[in-house]
Amino acid sequence: MENKEPVSFEITRRVPFYDLDPIQVVWHGNYMNYFEDARVALLQAHGIDLYEIYQRTAIVFPIIRTSTKHILPLRYQDEFVCRAIVREARFKLVFDFEIRLAADGQVCTRGRTEQVAVKAPEMEILFSIPDEIRQALGF
Image (cartoon, rainbow, N blue to C red):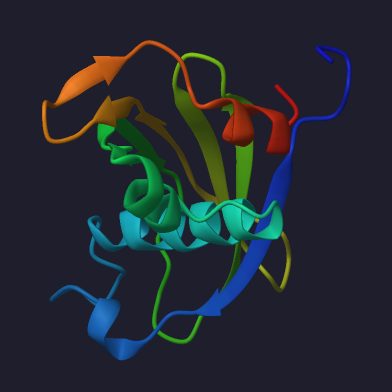
């Protein structure tokens, strides 16, 4: 399985006015919302609903690490594509993200998130991702 193309998914969005900061570019924290939208869309495309899994198994998936590299700011009404790519789904969920302008493909932002599986209510970290998620994502 290591040699196959990583699982990925793209969403397209347009920057709304309320995502802007006082200097009229997207406020840095809103990029996490774009990443989240792409991550959820990727998981849904593979039949994974983390909230449903939580309701059924009491396993939650908190984000434990994020990183973002801002290259070119998004501005009001920019149409952009956010691509989520699964990099790891054995011991934790690791997603890479790339945001680029829809018009010319220019890269604006790159990022990464990491999530672990945690058994609630004990808040016990599990050292593997549940089989149903790993299998759905090809790991």
